Length: 493
Image 1 (cartoon, rainbow, N blue to C red):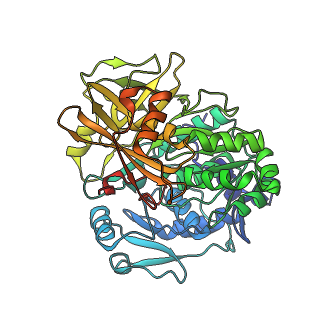
Image 2: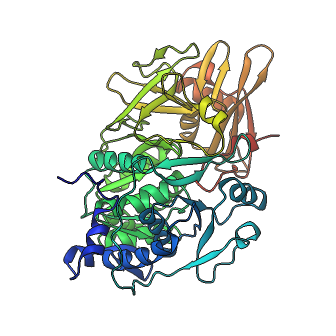
């Protein structure tokens, strides 16, 4: 029996080793619009590029939503060279920090891509994705602890931190999701997510490649694109809440979209909570549930709803195989089990990152003495293990009148009010309560926005009086990042 580590992408390894084309090697691996690479073509393109990367310490990847980005990342993984995906919309200061911090030896980019200053100064290799190469070297799988990707966090509390993700974390998460979702080589995934983060790149591209299946990338998300690809044989859809909100607003009047969604095997939303209103509208129009999962850059995936979607409303499912999860109160005691008591989520498992690059202090602070990672997310959990996220500890846990209140549950209830199109809930200092609840509302009708009294009564009737908003601000839109997450620290009067 061989003691070699199995390859990260078995189908790709088989296609690279084969001298004669097979049905598996001819299967589409990547499809971006009219551009498609089979497993054989991807093996040859990525293999040729990997040969050029041998001996590099790290490589930056200009992560546009293209087939070139996918080839570049796969090539780095084949060569065992850590890849640093770079958001093409990144600002100059943040880009300068990422390049200085990660010190890539070179940058991989598509032909004709114009790179900004900090990347333009690096040696460059232009990525070719034609597949017009002869079979090359066999690529032995590096050790499981070898860094695979360095993904930079959003930097909400200072400069972005480089999260070092080892190969075993990718394997652990993708295989656990495959088990939970019965994900196979027969599945065809469609999405329109960016390729510089966990959701779009690791789950959305590397996930199908590990299974030997196909990813069809929309380039740019549209409901027409979703309907087209699902109608043409795609079986799974990955998206973020802003995408599913657009689907929810469109599907009731679009029979073709409703039919396409109803035929999908799996509809998955992630990166932020999907409001119950959008869940209900999609289910009513299609008969299908959108399922949710929960993860973050440092942990990859922690929980997921089963593929049948039969979980508690608002739940992100149970811990995945191999993931230990607990809720801890402010005194460090385990809590939860009643779906009411709020605690911080802490996790352990093979899915975790190794370290924050060049930040031993931040790495040490992120873990407890017994090895649990402090996520900073606040949640409740029921007796069966189902988890419901109620917000971030830093921005979404409101301490008012002696109660600990999660902003997320108030936001979900406010979204059920017909006068509310979008909402964020925060806390602000109050001399009597400690903190008072503030609602930032995007009204459905700007000419007739709901009053603070009307919204307070609505929340008090659904939850409890102490959870009602005391202050309401009306906005034209909420500030969101590229993943659709609300940037609450940008909210101010």
